[in-house]
Length: 573
Image (tube, rainbow, N blue to C red; front, side, top):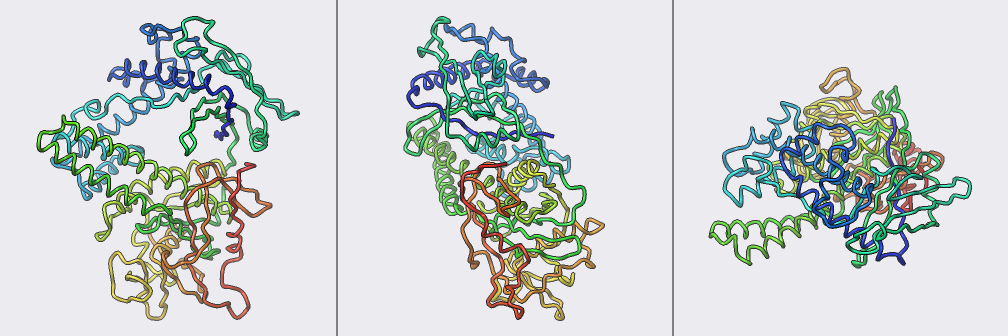
């Protein structure tokens, strides 16, 4: 089984004008073709096709109204781009039709989100679709504007518009025969030669208005290392921007690599519990109940900014709803506020994506560091909202769990780590040491039961085990996985009995470790996992006030290797 990794190659700044013309032309032509094909018929048609997206279209007809000369392979690449967009919206439309049958007669509120998903889960639709939360947001916004829900997907979703000139070259004829891009890599000299066809004018009218330019990019040692493990595939032309706003252009080359096979025997797992106040809690457990690590809380560090953006989006949405009620949705004031709403919503969406990628990278890094056979998580249907948490916390919990797990599955498949799911009940209220029932309270300093408290206490007086609620949940996820049935096996208990104080994530000390959106690189001989930049944080869940009598610190044999996480450019895979 194979997968694709990629590394962008920056194109030279001295030809920026040529690349800018290519990007603008791509955006202009692609938007024209997409608008012409934004119909129910075409969504149905391309959804039924299984071959390359560009083959669905007539190769000439979509461009007849454009008074431009466009090379044949450039046209194919445009059709591939548009076809992939239409396929994506065909999937979203199918999810929309599933949701239609379970919509309430009024505006969707937090509790209704949960009921909608529960009804979809019964048919398996929720777990097979990644669009449910996005569609619910769209439906809520539509209801605010119109006081009813749309009867068709096209009533809710306007024709999408490309805002950048990304151009996939997957519909071209290959590295040496390509008519839009050519590339050749010499493994001996480690030299990559790229030839790219770009327009000489913003509106090319003849074949002579297109020219080939050749580049030999250097300084990409990581790219050469990556090629040692796989084969080049057709690149994608990508306009990008610095934080300063200055533009630059890249070719992103996918490299097909063989995935490492999963282990047939699962003796050691990284068990996960997704909480409301922490994005993920992870702990390493073996099949005989031995805990090999202190638990780790993984927490996205920009949650407060997400909350501020959420509050701002809610405030703007309330203003828009008020203007609609007053019949002023046609005014300049409405347009201005709506534009600001879209800007804030876009920022929030970006933060969401960053959260799911960063947390997933942290989980995979820990799995590789401890050399586990599998990552085990609880089924998404076990999610239930806490009564004392705000809207954003529940929103984050519901969509983030699914997206984080999907990102973990993708990364783990490349690394040869299995991902398994269990269906636990009561994982946060069963003692992992003795199996007795316990209760949750506000903190280690409190004893009064609080249903959504963050700290667990065992009710068995002879045991007295206590710990962070999510840590207990992660341990019990492992217990369920290694048991014979789908419920907690009270004969299977954790052997972790060291003298230590379990503290909440907010009170834990720990090194801030950052990882990016790329696949984590791991070199077993270095006992370390590395990746690019990011903003998730690992904090130890156990604070040890003093060493044990034997001079050890009470932790498992490999937990100290957590300090081997490094922030550096990924160099090997």
